[in-house]
Image 1 (cartoon, helix red, strand yellow):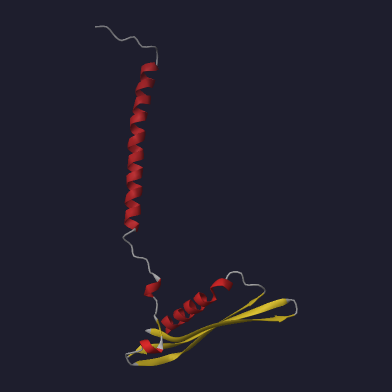
Image 2 (cartoon, rainbow, N blue to C red):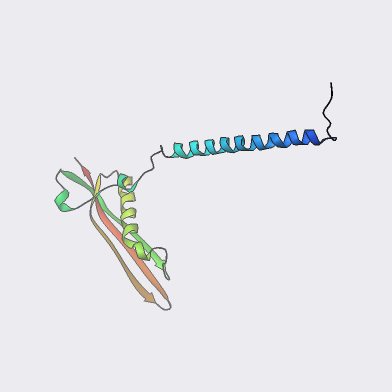
Length: 139
């Protein structure tokens, strides 16, 4: 029986390198399978949307009898330019009023108003944003 001639250590290195090329795709496939499973599981979870918040109703939409829980007024005053809020004042005001109405246990909001005015005293301008509405609960 004749043994194959093999220079020292080369046969072993080739066997290991062949094993590495087989193992890499298996590990890569397993990682991709786990990632796709995790991403698909995240799509099952329902995130809250804006539709879950309290509705803002007009007087024409009030068909059912209701009780006024109270008038809500939220004020925010800034000194200097307010770059974070200026383009979206109405959205800020309605979100703030909704949040306060939810704390009161309201079912809806009626007559919302969002205003803002700027005054200047000296060099620093001051801007006051005011949001108000009436929180109601249906009977």
